[in-house]
Structure formats: structure tokens, C-alpha cells
Length: 245
Image (cartoon, rainbow, N blue to C red; front, side, top):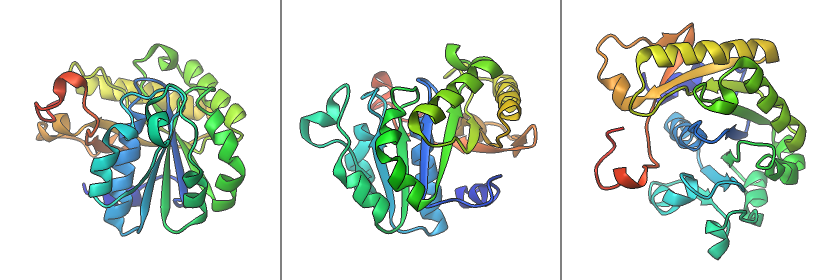
């Protein structure tokens, strides 16, 4: 299924101008930002801006492949100069200019209360544009392995960031050890959290390579659309070896 078709099946009523994506370490939230950006551009949105406002984790994030994204036709906003690689990069004023400008804006947000502080700095501008705040969840990480843990994280991010989470995404995996049972069981945990929170679970992610090897791959998991997630940010030992994970 094409990304544009997946976007059209989203459980939210409509996409707003600004889409912020958050998730705990190991959730894959930066990959979701990139996949959503591709989907919006495939749908015809122009321009599409990707803003890295993750102030907690400078690794495995959008800024690692910023130059490639620009070559692919995206607008990319990261911290400037040496701050781009700092542990707590300052937010660029260009983020606010992007929010006030044309086109779609995707924000890659740190996935804990400290990371949500970046949203606090931008909350008035984000509210003015209209927004969706998506929480990406890997049910096989310690912080988010139970519905209660997921609920607590979601509520903390909303409280600190001063913006309400709109929907959840299940991206439950164990890297190369992932099986279809892991995907299904993880989505079930996230679905329970979504029910507790009164929020929609809009997608269940699975690695695109794994999905491509399954001739009988389902299009939904528990009634939730399945998104074959393309990986763009590779681990150090994978670089130069192709996207085989």
C-alpha cells in the first residue's frame, strides 16, 4: 500500500499543518518523522519541512542525515553550527519561521518530559497553526512495556509540553529479532493504552524489509493499518552495508 493511501486511512479526522512526533528512546520516532514526511510529499504537500527539535538525544536522529534530506527536496531545520551536535542543542529561530510559513511542518521531539520542553517553547505558535502530536510506542522498551507505563509517559509529555497528544502509533519491535507475533502483541499493548487514554491508535509499524518478505502480509493488525516502515537512519555497523535491518 502506498504511503499516500496509508495517510488517507488515518483515524484522525484530518492532518493539521504541524505534526509533532515524540517517543521514548528506541521507539523509532525519528524514522516515523521521515516516513510521514515522505507520505505527505507523495500526497502532493509542498513544501515539507522537517525540524529536529530533539534536545535530549543527538544520536540516531534527523540531523544525522540532514544533507541527504535537503538533496531529496525537503526543507530541514536543525540547531545551528556546533550546537547541531551538542547534547542539548538550542532551538533554531528558523523553526518558528517554518511554523509561520507555507506547507507542512514535521517536528521530531525528544521522547521524555525533558524533551517535551522544546514543545513548551513553541506551544503558542504550534497551537496557532493547528497540530497533531503523535506518540510512537515500542512496547518492548522498559518504560513503555505496559499500558500504564505508556499512559504515564503520554500524560507527562502532554503536561510538560503544554500540548495534548492526539494519537498513538505502535512501533513495537526487537530489531532483527522481531517476528510477526512481536508486532501483533506489541500493538495489543499499545491499543490498551490508547483505550485508557481515550486516543486513537492510528498505525502499527513493521520494518519494510520484513514486511516485503511476507507474501501473506496483513494490511491491518487488530484492525489498525499496518505501515511498512522504511529505515533511513542506520546504526554505525550498518552504514555501507545496505538497509538490511
